[in-house]
Image (cartoon, rainbow, N blue to C red; front, side):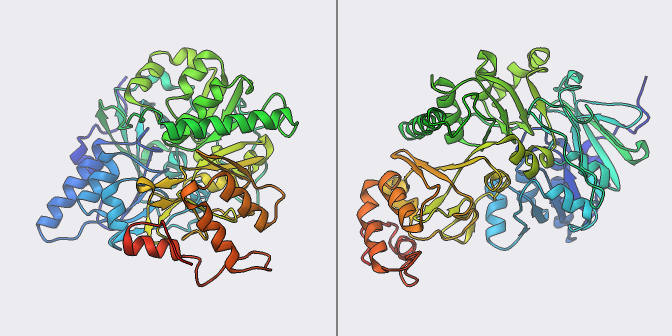
Length: 495
């Protein structure tokens, strides 16, 4: 039976969106993002600009997106406002040049901020689906993100039905939204395997302005092979967690794992899966990467709850070809639930995220280069770090061929404070900061995590101010950063 919704071209759908409106797009990373409609909006913006007319929209998503969304719109200079996270180089440059406003925010709170009205009206929701029902049921694809909230709050809805994705995705999602205060109760997830919501999103059929049919792959990319540095980081973290089990500080049955995105995260998960001292485990996380799929197939990961399947093209084909096998082992939820502080605290998550830099007292910068240039955003790292059973950050000890130390006297921008950061790992080792004074934390970080080329310089910094609880020297705290900006090298700082 044909659906009671207009079948549109991407250009016809884009023509409905007007200058100055705010659009909520589905997806979380490039997974599950609409593709044809954003590219058509970009083309519309270019045509309007060529005619001398303004055309820019507000863009809200679950997290980062693919080139056909953030990339196309940024190149067309069509984004006036962006939240909550991005990773596109063109958009990043526009944000740092002040051409596009960017609101960096914790991913768990964005859906409720939209429902509360703090981000203004949502004029359109544009979502990718594997199937749509006549009654307004929408089966999402490889990610959930904030799509349920966009669909709920948007004035009108456009759906890209991606024929590359099988309708068999029905049943792979668990769509649940908390009731807003003062009527909110607990989120009834007591184990990663619990299903508490609906397998699909539902909207009033009259809101669906049209359907655009596509046949497109997600624009996720593969990950670099492990390097010596990422392998050593993974090995150190696996050894540390295994020792915590032996010491009785982590249950013998282990605890659910959350892992950030990137090459280091992929290597760490691979190391956990290979370590004989780590038992089979579950994941309660926001992103699943390639390394998790073979762990699921081998039984090392027994269940994975996530918001997004951020997989390479080869790996997503393997998963979609075996959806029935993965159905009892894998579930996709909204970011408001995967990152929910209450659930993270209840389940006892071990959180593992990456840092740009860490200062000697345990504060972490995960968003800004030299304190000023936005990289991507805080993402979900803060949601997990503040509420985890055990919070861990990792990074290489140096960058730029050894010219930058990632262990510094004072982070140039702080996203996670020393009160939330418990463990730091680099390729040199692990610093366990729990229960330590500021000076003791500094000693651990310098001796165990800093590159040997920078250790003595960091010790010299600590000697500048003695007899203080936190021996920062306000006149010298950023001297390594300033020297790098002047000379391109942090080495050899003279305090």
